[in-house]
Structure formats: structure tokens, C-alpha cells
Amino acid sequence: MRVCSLFPLLPRRGLVRPLSVLVLVWGLALALTVPRSAPAADVIRLRYANFPAASTFPCVQMEKWADVVEERSGGRLAIETYPGGTLLDARSILRGVARGQADIGCISLSYHPGSFPFFDLFGLPLGFDSARDAGEAAFALYRKYQPKELAPYKVLLMFACSPSQIMSSTPLAGLDELRGLPLRAAGSLSDVIAAVGGQAVSLPMSETPEALQKGVVKGVFSSWDTLKDYNYAESCRYGLAVDSSVYPFVVVMNKKAWDKLPPDLQQVLDGYADEHCRWTGDYVDDWGRQAVAWSEQTYGFQLKRLSDPDRVRMAELTAPLLEEWKAGAAELGLDGQAVLDDVFRLRDELKAGR
Ligand code: DTR
Image (cartoon, rainbow, N blue to C red; front, side, top):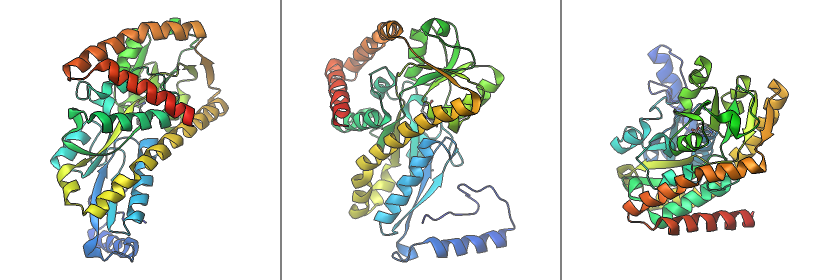
């Protein structure tokens, strides 16, 4: 059972009460929630910053991860989780972890255009059909290539969202209806929208509901889970299944905080990473399917699938993006084609192995 500190850095709490009551409640909570197996003096507290709403899958996976690592550490780790930007917002988490304002942070790499040239690849259409496979592939690529862009951090794990789809307030039958349509995307996924003729508006997820409400965007390029978790289905009654790019996520830890952990606790975190990556992918893939069914029942959401000719056209229109990434990879000292060959081999092996 995780420690929930109550004052003043109230992760997941917003109540304001007299200090004495709160400190008493906090002390009681602390006494009741620190597992018997670890004396309080031995408990290492880690602050984990996350950006989207607590109900969304990046925060659901955070809570799952925290529960498991606390359990497997025998209570010697206490993870204080901060969803919804309550400690650091989407654009501040990376810097905040580097500075030690948070020990751990979850970021969507696509929110930092230009900062992650290697992983911009995963924001392009690579043909993954599940978050589980895309996340495993991204994590494997990280381990193989160790891109310098993540060198300042300890990478605890990587995962991905399910393939991005298009949800819109205007009816969609195919690519033609996307022409000039303002759609929210992020990072290199914005290039995909532009390539098919849409008007890409690059925003983090946390700023998208307001942009939809104000009409700044008419739809969202993201995975189906957001239909329910952000209630996009209320304003976006039309969906076009394009099964496109995924958004890669990384959970990073401040390197000094990591180095201070005893080796056996480091092994707890490293030893759980792959299992958690798969758990997260399965969770969001399943949740996305449930979100579509819920949207159809609740709002009469109408889902169309991109026609085969349009799928071919979309692949042709976005192919230059892969060529551009390959050219950029050369500047990173990498053989871009070899990396792509690795990605496609992993994609096919993971799909065959499911
Ligand atoms: N689609 C990406 C990633 C993403 C998918 N679901 C959620 C929920 C909460 C935050 C991000 C995401 C994106 O649009 O940011």
C-alpha cells in the first residue's frame, strides 16, 4: 500500500485543512501505510511526476508500477505519485527530473520536438498494430542503440500508446475529408497529418480538451483510449481508423537518485521493466477497444475504416517522412536503413509471437 503524503505536497489530494489536523492525519497515514517489513528509517521515498489526468493510461501504469516495485522492494521503496501535472506539467517533467525536482518522470517523447531525433522515428507510420508490440520494440531499440538524447537520464522503461486514429467533430469518409482539417497531434505525428493534407496543431494531450472546446481544432490524432479518458467522443462523434503512428513514452529517473539506490533495489526496478512494458501495452490496447464501444453506445460514435486505396495513398504520402528520418539518422552517426530494418524485423517477430 503506497504512502499518500497529505500536506503540503499533496499528490492526488487537493483538500486544504488546518495544519494540525492534516499533520495528524498524515502521520497516521504514514504509520498505517509503511509496510511492517521496512522500518521507516529504511524507506526510500521517490517522487514520480506525470502529466495527464489520473484516469488516463500513462497514470494507470504509473500506479501499477508503483504498487509492484513497493511490494517487490519489501516496502523499502515508497513511490509518491503526482498525476495531472500536480508536481510538474507536461513540458517541465524532463527538466524537472534532470534538476531533481522529481526523482522519476513519465514523458511523451513527441512533446519535445527536436529533442529526441532518434525516437522521432516512432512517431512515424511504422505499421505497428498494438501498443504492446510498439512499446516492446521501442524499449529494445533503446537498449540496442542507447541514443545520446536520453543519456542524461536513467531510463526505467519505455512504452507506447496504441496506433493513432482520427476522431473528429465533422464526418469522415476517407483522406479527402482530412484536407485542411485542423487536427491536434504532437511531435512527428504532426508531420503525418500535414503529409495527408490536414492542418496539424501541435499540442500536448493536457491542452487538447480546451482547444477542441474553443474550436481551435476539429479533431484529434491519437489513440482510441482518449475517446473515453478525455471524453473526446462527446464532441468528436466521427472516427476514421487509419491505424497510424504510436506515441512513444519514456519513464526516466534522475541519475543521482538512481545511483543512490542500493543494487538490489536497482535490480527490482530493472527486473520489472519488460513485464511492465507488456502490461501497459496490453492495458491500453484493451482500454482503447472498450473506449470505442462505450463511445458508440453513449454518443452514437460512428467509426469508419480507411479504404484500402486510401491506405495505399497514405503510405505513399508519408513515405518521404521515413526518408527524411533516415537522412537525419546519418547525422546521428547511425545507418538509418539498418535501424529501420531492425524496427520492421522486431515488429514482425513480435506480431508473430503473440
Ligand atoms: N496520443 C498521444 C499519447 C496518448 C495516448 N493516450 C493518452 C492519454 C494521456 C496522455 C497521452 C496519451 C498523445 O496524444 O499525447
